[in-house]
Amino acid sequence: MPAAPPAVSPGLPRRIRVGYGLGSLCTGTFATVPGLILLYYLTDVLAVPAAVAGAAVFLPKAWDVLINPLVGALCDRSRLPGGGRRAFLLIGACTLPPLFALIFAAPPLRGAAAAGYVAVLFLLAATAYAVFQVPYVTMPAEMTEDPRERGRVLGWRVGFLGVAILLSGAVAPAIAHADGDTPASYRLMGAVVAVLLAAGMFGAWAATRGAPEAARSRAEPSLRAQLAAARSHRPFLYLAGMWTLQALAIGVMLAGVQYFATYTLGSATAVTWLFACLIGPLVLFMPLWNRLARRKGVRYAQWCASLLYTAGAAVLGLTPAAGPAVGYASVVLVGIAYAGLQLLPLTMLADTLSADAARTGVRRAATFTGLWTAAETLAFALGAGLFALVLAVTGFRSSDAAHHVSQPGAALTGIAAGMSVLPALLGAASLWLLHRYREPATDSPKEEPARAD
Image (cartoon, rainbow, N blue to C red; front, side, top):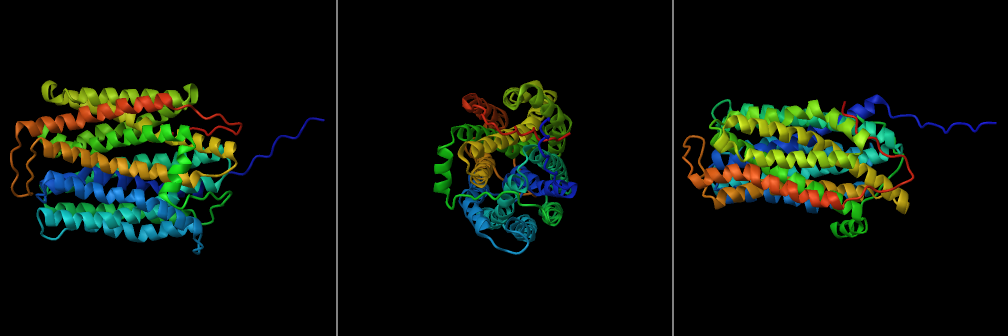
């Protein structure tokens, strides 16, 4: 008598899969808009010196490295009504949107005083974001033990992430520049983006009501304990290191794109077209990266995306000599690669965590995802800090909205190099870590690449 086929576990309701994905309207927006606008807002609207502005952007986000493990430990011990993870989603949803709006609602301050105001509000906003993000990224590993179902959940997350990056990255600069880079236009932009954040955060909290908890992972209670766990898992170390360098390269480029539009292409409003070239391919090419990962393997697809990103960033440096057409074309290449870099590392991370659980018998998803998000957040923040350092070293002159000043030739060269050469070098360095990474072997079913198509 033939053996009965194995039972197939029921999938998650579509409401939960889609509702969970809504949270990426928050994570994608908060990762994009401050990195794209905040440094320029400080140096060219509030007359903050470049070095001081870089510190005001970097230090509050660096705080996430310390706060993320604490939030993870609090989530693990939480007995709040409505589910330990979801309760933190609600707290973050109630606090982050108003704090974000206040960042750009600065009183009539200039220079170091304006930098202090922005830094304090950005620190509070970063803390509220950690309260939402840490439990949010842990939830897929706990809602289902079926790797394919987790792949579907991650697919909605990645899909909404692309929508958030495209929408916020196009709308925020357009509103900020609509009235000539005035403080009033930035206040309006902050309020509009706060509404988008609230929609994603409250949507994810409401739609995941009743989500199952098939397994519960626990994070180590301190950053030191998390790092000790990571040191025992070499594939994760190489994978996280690779993505940290690539996130740093993306952070540098995001911080530089507004300066590149204003001072290299000669128009502040050109940032909208640059961002369309960068993010437009995210929607069009992510399904193709997904298909390549299925046919050739995720690691092979990651190699292709990483090489394309590095090459596109290097060619971008030719824009001052070759003209704007080369700049736009290079950004399109970077955007095609960026579509893969948003999808493939997450899939590789899911494979690595699944293999670790099969190998050790211990669920450490909360620990590793906490480290992953902390490294990612720190890299994006450091990217803005590095670009600010380039501005300071090359003699960039800050100004306010009413009195724009001309820049020395060294500063113009620094803007072009910071937007191209520095990201290309970081992308090349990440290739060594990708080379050292080995796909983990496991007897458990392999994670499907997140379906973004």
